Image (cartoon, rainbow, N blue to C red):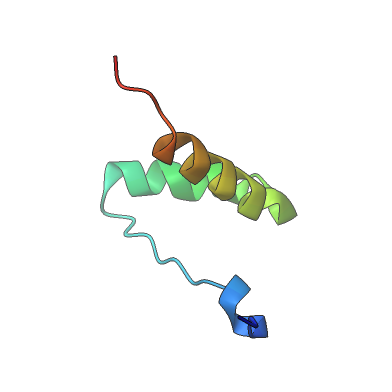
Length: 52
């Protein structure tokens, strides 16, 4: 299956009224162009976590 160039682009809108969203906004704002790597790693680790 071929991917279109838009398959790799997403828009995420955070709600600054929500404390966890504000935290995410602040942290992501510090990263510059490495946001995608942090988000990809977070999703990967979240989906592959082991529950004890």
